[in-house]
Image (tube, rainbow, N blue to C red; front, top):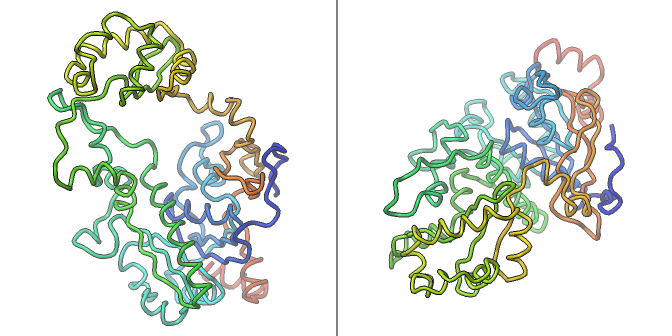
Length: 410
């Protein structure tokens, strides 16, 4: 079913940027499906392999409309699988593995998130696949990569997130009581890994198109996270070691109607904050003379900045500091962002209709091509495209499909 009409400011792309790229996705939950989604929303033909009967575990994860669980109504699954086709296939069967090889013969890309060694145990060793399909780009996403002492460790999202130093940068300043590291919201590490995998996949696909040779793209979720914090990590692992962090002034401040983030790190940004606060007398003291002095007197100065912020709304602080050249931004809720005039003007949220879940608003894509953006379609029903893919692409007859279904292959 096609998506509902969208804002004309972000008209659908007519012909995706990746039209003609054939992708086979054997992914579960978030990282690999997000990689596949990014490719599918750009126009690639992404065929998603799901287990017969049960499908992707994401189908059983919340949120659900009305909080009523249903395998075709998971908000997580619906978002992660826009623009794809779904087929069911069991790689536990010899027949399923034979069909898998036939699908690979016609694919440009395989994206999977199997544990290291899992495909080999199924008789689908990646080395053998590379020899059999030399043009194939094979992207594999694992928690720690496919080498090293941690290659076989099993993880949940929380384990991977805290295996990188990502959360240590949100600790309290040195000398203050240490807070426990913050838990990552939902599946942050998984999305970062999926984005990294999509970038590597596109690079390898371009190389394959130019040279005729495929690539094995191995993505470590942990390394994807560390890549995001590479500047801070670099400062810590290279000499000279940075001085103890005493904490910056400003930061997350309470306003009348919520929170706002203010970062007056450089001197001219601090002076902008001073002007916005009305240049109170305390800002002229030696404690405020430069960045080092302000850090040393943070415990004295921060409560005064906080007291000023509590007299204003988020927008008053935001616009006031913007005029003075000081970085600031209001902390907005999801509902506020959806109604924000900036998001409405650019048509970022789109309405998509689904036969089981109904019509809902979805985040689209953060880019425009000549004024055109998301041109994708709804997430598929479980096995919705079995007849189309197996029949039209591989030539199986309806009776063949009936036999394969009864045998538990599809």
